[in-house]
Image 1 (spheres, rainbow, N blue to C red):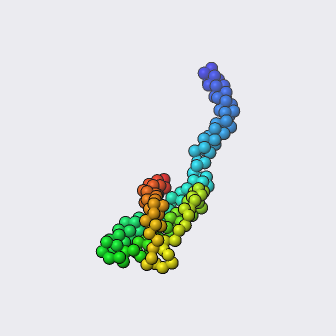
Image 2: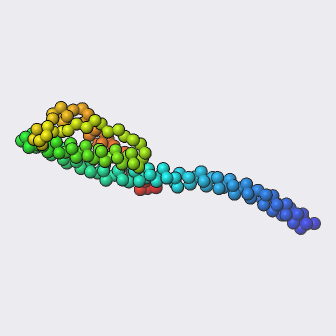
Length: 162
């Protein structure tokens, strides 16, 4: 008698399980889709490419800021030979900022407006425009690039770990 009940119970449970399988599979597929969607999204891969592509730019900015800028300032203090060097360093920083903006626009999809361009010199490299060279806008750009460097390294570490 117990065998008959057990068999009847087993058939009933099999039919209930079979009826609930499509719903369970659908729920599992929905859960897997919601969990995996960020990993297969094009936006995720563009963001990862942005973080990886901006690290070399950040390293170049770090080298220019930590080596080139102090060297130019010391050369200004020792002799006036640092003035053209400072103009060159700021032109390189401007170029790196343009590259950073282009990378952000292309990979992150965030358009970053460029500041109005002003030439650093009056046509010759030994006659810089002091208003442009020492202006607040130029140094704000340098500070923004320097502040972006730790953020880029943290983003690179997150991408490298994941």
